[in-house]
Image: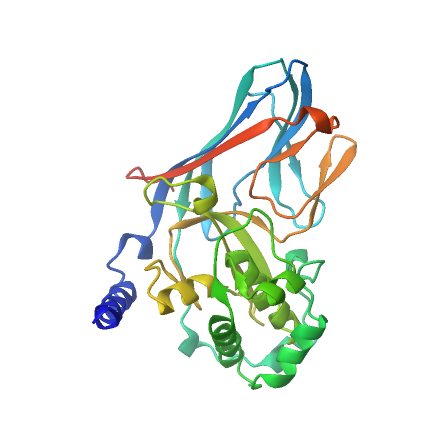
Length: 331
């Protein structure tokens, strides 16, 4: 009986999404706050560099009124993907704390792609160069990994891009299980060894499979928006964008597809359709940041990243994220 009601609700939700009856199927405006509190529990002054990501400005979202506090923050751009980030270099007196905050307003659009209007084939990618380095392979996205190559050999092959993407997503949903989120990103070896992974793990495998087939795909990292306040870690999310031969983007969210199939979530995230209930903060992973004259490498631009030369004076970090829906409309 439980499965019957869950199936009925899933059908109702899917119909409502198709008709765009729910708030996350329409453009939304948010007032967002990303806050970090650092505490020094020691009897000595602790020096540090704090790095936080800045939201992406692109076709699916438009960012306004960015404020950084304290106001002495510096802003950088990563050398590979063009992601923006803010950083503070400071010292914290003994037994003191300090608050750092990013606030902004944003207009977020849902992304709905009509597959039946487009009939692209894998061969259409031949000779095409990805328009952005975030679509390239790296230490996490490894199309030549032995397990990835084995899956490619065993899965059905289709000339159609859409059929091939659906096949890859179906494989992930059937083979892996969604579990507790981690702060970083699963490597392929960790994901295949565990088989219980988070959204990032689903995405690492999906992107690696796409790249192995010659389909450009990239990781998008951010946070859920518009839902009741939850912990920072529970608000984190990541999904995938696939580049089509004509340069258009298709959004994919295999972890939400898994959760909906198992009636564990009603959020929108199926292949070709994601809602306006998420905010993107960065593209790609394994990112090199320039902090003044130093290079700092981070796996993701999502969590705040703390750099301290004195490891014995490790500061404690508390984080908070909140994105509240607002009525004011920006153009």
